[in-house]
Image (cartoon, rainbow, N blue to C red; front, side):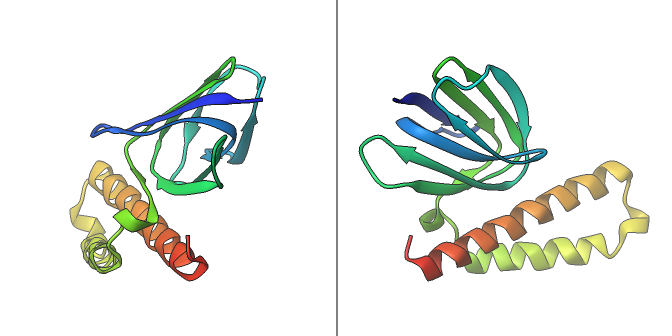
Amino acid sequence: MSMEFKVITPDEVAVTATVEYVYLPGSLGEMGVLEHHTALITSLEPGELRYKPMDGPEESMVVGTGFVQVNGNQVLMVTDLALNSSQIDEGSVERAIQEAQEVLKTRSEMSREEQARFEANLTKQIMMLNFKRKHKSSGR
């Protein structure tokens, strides 16, 4: 029982693995994918991705927005962000959150598109910080 799983970002192929399962942050909540899942395409929200390689323990990473395609026993995720805990610098993320919050205080001077962009970035930064803190304390 296995599936081929791939996570692609604009910068790299972040994951290529044969897995038992994938849990991902879908736009309607966490979604599990097992072998022989119904074919689908769905959107992703920023959150935690968990998957179990056939030859090792469960792994996790923080992902951004994007899409997932499930077709047969293949799961393809395309996202703008995919980082494991060791790739996240907590100090840099905290500074980015503070900067985004300061910019958002001047909302009246921003277009709706700029507001949406900053709010989306802030959501991703907060998710990264929470993920890093969770995995720092759990030892993963």
